[in-house]
Amino acid sequence: MSASIIDGKAFAAGVREKVAGHVARLREEHGIKPGLAVVLVGEDPASEVYVRNKGKQTLEAGMNSYEHKLPDTTPEADLLALVARLNADPAVHGILVQLPLPDHIDAEKVINAIEPAKDVDGFHILNVGLLGTGQKAMVPCTPLGSLMMLRDQLGSLSGLNAVVVGRSNIVGKPMAQLLLRESCTVTIAHSRTKDLADVCRGADILVAAVGRARMIPGDWIKPGATVIDVGINRIPAPEKGEGKTRLVGDVDFESAVEVAGAITPVPGGVGPMTIACLLANTVTACCRAHNLPEPEGLTA
Ligand code: NDP
Image (cartoon, rainbow, N blue to C red; front, top):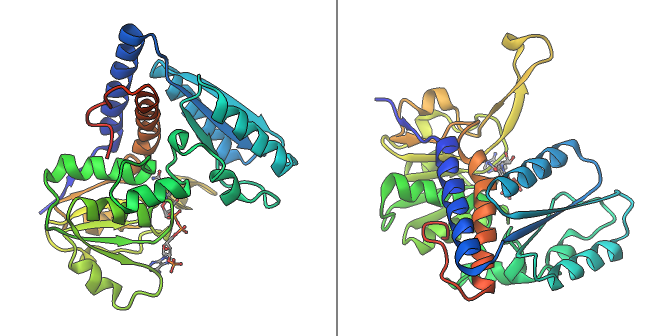
């Protein structure tokens, strides 16, 4: 048996198309143009690439993109002042402060200074609480994208056993909350979990968000399970030439694909969905700000 491959690239293109359609309607029917502000502090090369891609895709979806690049010596107070300005700016519907921040800045303080309704990353403590209590929240992008793919693949998730490996605030915990809201029976596994292989073998839905290259082999997977591999790990790829590298997930794709019912590849699975869901959250935030109906299929 060979799993069907969940094409995150194509799925993300579909989400971006829906976002662009909604943006166009907002403009035509209400004269509103959603805007996303992205703040980058410092010169981390990976963050710079993310921020550039976010800006490009925001513009392509027909929205306004506001980029704020600050030096890594920026005092915390200056960053908080910028966040306050963006909070007050009616043209800005979504605010994202790119993480990680330099050590002298308290990331939690900055995140919790963002107006919750504009917190398109869904990391503000209020949004975490709203999600945890089943209320209308801004939902973190990576878990939201993963949920969209699971719903598309499986329809109703009700009653399924879901195992989330990883308990970070940005992926594992919100993913588990979303699955619980879908009436899955949810287990959250982490580095102290005993008999992880057995725990994984009970999963109808297995979400891996660990950050360890190919740590979940095919024989940990229940036959027919749906596997969402969030991990992004760079490993040496001598077959591509000296010093070359390639990306792999937390799941050993080659063995897992023989057992699973459906699986996301790395790259080309969850990754492309994250920015697409950032755009979706920005449109949602804009609609909520203007008391307009939320875009269908783009929220949790
Ligand atoms: P964190 O490092 O914050 O969390 C990793 C989690 O994995 C922790 O809860 C940790 O447990 C657990 N863990 C570590 N080792 C083991 C182990 N041997 N067995 C079981 N659990 C273990 O990572 P993130 O959640 O931020 O990211 C996870 C992965 O997802 C990374 O590869 C990251 O690059 C990727 N990612 C991908 C995104 C995308 O867009 N596709 C977006 C965000 C992340 P404990 O809490 O006990 O330490």
